[in-house]
Amino acid sequence: MIASPVITASALGLTRNESGRRFPHAEDASALVALRAEILELLVGPGWEKPWYVYDLDEMTGVEIEHMVERGLMTPTFSEVSRAGRGFAVYGDGDASLEVNGDDHLRILGFRDGGQLAILWALLNHIDDRLETAISYAFDPRWGYLTARPRQAGSGMRAYATLLLPALALTGRLAGTAVDLAHHGMGMMALWGGAGGVVQLSNVLGQGKSEEDMLREIGEVCRGILEKERSVRKMLVRESPVQSRDQIGRAIGAAQQAWIVSFHEAVNLISAAQVGLELGLVEAPGLEAESAFGLMCRLQPAHIVVDTMDRRADSLESSEIDEQRARLLRDVFAGATVRA
Image (cartoon, rainbow, N blue to C red):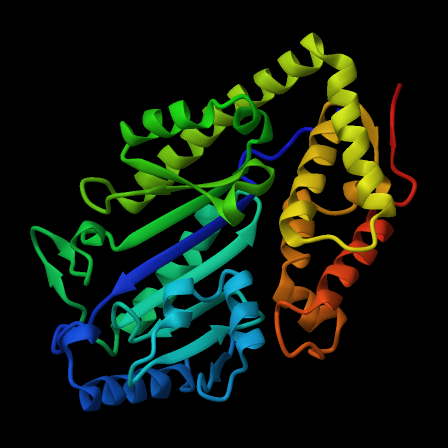
């Protein structure tokens, strides 16, 4: 039996504002443009362990922007905002990224497969310290780092842990789990419309705890939730063994034979197969070769256009994307079987 990771993916964001300027939504365009110039000059200067790649947002296509969103390097909100002075840069080979003049003056982002919140915090904290040598952050002794959204004031940190919880979703137990999380100052939201039982946990408030304590608590809460998920999976197989194998088998059959697959359908198929793999009901060498979440990510529309279609599609609604996705699934699930 294959053990599932506690956290399937980790993401972290640090929000900061320059003390000498108003928040972006209330600041003059000239002041935002000047701030962007100051930030970008710092990024291309010496002292960084890895290079920053600065993007011209006006020159980026819709597919390229969505690809950054899918990679966790750009927030959906930032991708949709249109105001003077916006800037965007990526650190190293996607190790981290920086949004300038979105909802706030600065937002440092990081994303990784697996449970790597502590590693992300170390990297983003280092970048944050480097930026603070040239920028005077808006900080209040009582409220901490000031942000455009008061609930995020304090540490200015938002941590996200992605979990695959198909059994809890199938049995309608996610709502109760979300209520329990609220008592810990955390929230839960469905990712990708709830396909495959994929959810994100995050801290709701940024005050009252250190960053390390927040990350430690998120890890502990995730372990508890995953234990519930594993328990429900075993219960479903024990009480309905034929139905469980049937559902998993149908998912694998569709992945092996379909020629058109939407993204949400692909996530559902992979999630079901992954449950079978972890319960020892499935042999799937292709799926074992990479994480289920990693496979889901690379089947997102912009990933397919950029990685497998040489950016040929003009729209993320192109039917060819669904065809390419089906081909990739057939390759991954070739030879997969359900054990009797």
